[in-house]
Image (tube, rainbow, N blue to C red; front, side):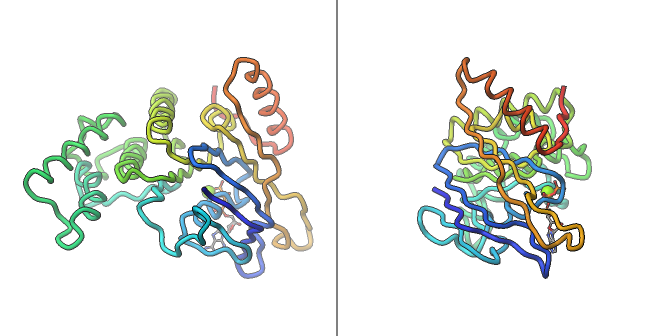
Length: 263
Ligand SMILES: Nc1ncnc2c1ncn2[C@@H]1O[C@H](COP(=O)(O)OP(=O)(O)OP(=O)(O)O)[C@@H](O)[C@H]1O
Ligand SMILES: [Mg+2]
């Protein structure tokens, strides 16, 4: 479904990513881990079509990625973007409304009620059923994050791009959101790219873990080299594999010095 071919990304003379090659099948769940600043968010922006690769190409279904982000690539970014002037419910209704009612930007009658019910149901699933009429400023950070997730999922994207989606959540809600995401992933055959700083989260949720790391470092020229994918670990969820996954996780942690955050 997605093919990344020899992709480089450079900002001025700073190389951020170099020689990325990757083939991802529909339905895979890729966890992206790596040190802060190594280019994970940049990579998501390339997948979204928000930015162009300096070199190389990204193919979606065998064709060059459209230059514009579209609804097929739902996105929850590190700094989630919800509309401050819209209620929680309206925030989640907005995407479907805009795509179904291209000219008016608003639905009426039965279609509006259907959109409202679908939005309310999604909000209930992310635990915001009691906050439909609140405004984003009245929500906690974790609630805003869940709102952003509901917003993205409403568009039934084929590819979901998540940039540290659970960073601001407390451990209990985080667990609930893990379960929800795993359920939605299986249900909708989503293809997911999720950046996380929590190795355990990455290994638990992903069907594949991609580690971004700088292999070469020149202290005289910090921008000379970018990060590459240094580990690409497929995870089969069988009992025998559980200990192998554990070993892989420990190896990645040693190699990258990424801290294990959660319990
Ligand atoms: N628009 C931009 N212009 C110039 N440099 C940029 C731009 N966006 C990112 N960078 C640089 O690219 C590098 C990678 O940034 P990026 O945000 O992709 O890292 P990250 O892996 O997501 O880090 P973190 O884990 O802290 O979120 C950083 O050095 C950053 O300063
Ligand atoms: Mg980032």
